[in-house]
Image 1 (cartoon, rainbow, N blue to C red):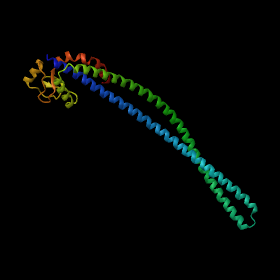
Image 2 (tube, rainbow, N blue to C red):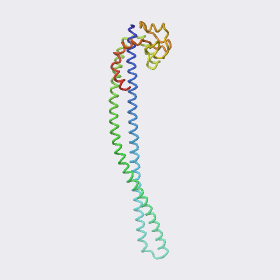
Image 3 (tube, helix red, strand yellow):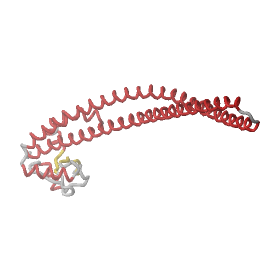
Image 4 (tube, helix red, strand yellow):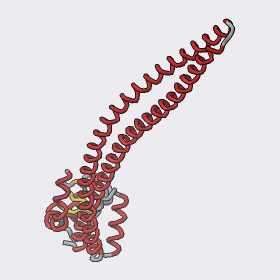
Length: 255
C-alpha cells in the first residue's frame, strides 16, 4: 500500500479528532459565558433592588426632615395665638395652623406609605440575597466542572497537535500541501473512505476503473467529483486505529 496514503489517513484521523475537540472546547467556553451572563443578570437584579431601597430610605429621611419643619412651624404658629389682639388676625392664624396640620397629615401618610415599601423591599431583598448566595455557589461549582473538562480537552488538543506535527514531517511536502489545501476547501475532511463504490465525502458513485485503483491502494486516488483522497474501508481499519485510540474515549463521552 502507498506509504503516503497510510500517513494521510492517520493525519486525517488526528485532524478530525482535533477539529472535534476544538468544537467541544468552544462549547465549554459558551457554557461558561452563559453561566456568567445568568449570574450577572441575578447580581444586577439584586443591585437594582438595593439601589431602590437606598432611594426609598433617602426619600424617607427627606420627608422626616420636612415633617420636623412642619411641626416646628405649627408650634410657632400656635405660640403666636396668645399674642394676637384682633379677631381677624386670630382667624387668619387658625387658618394657617389648619393648613400646616393638613400638610403634616399628608406628610405622615406619605412617610407611612414609604415605610411600608421599605419593609416589603427589605423582606424581598433578604430572600433575593439568600437565593443569590445559592446561585453563586452553584455557579462556582458548575464553572469549576466545566473548566476541568476544558483543561482536559485543551491538553488533549496540544498532544494531538504535537502528534500531527511529528506525522507531518514524514509526509512528502507536496502531498501534505495538497492535503492541507483539500482540508481547507472541504471543511476539514480531505481523506475519506469508499463504501459500495460510493465516496463517503460527497456520496457520488466512483467509476469502476477509479474504484479498482482505490482498492489497489498503490497510488493516491482522488474522487472524480469532490477531489477528496479516497481509501477503502479495510485500509482504514488497519491504519487509523493507532491514531484514534487515544481520542476515542473523549469523543464517545461527548457524543
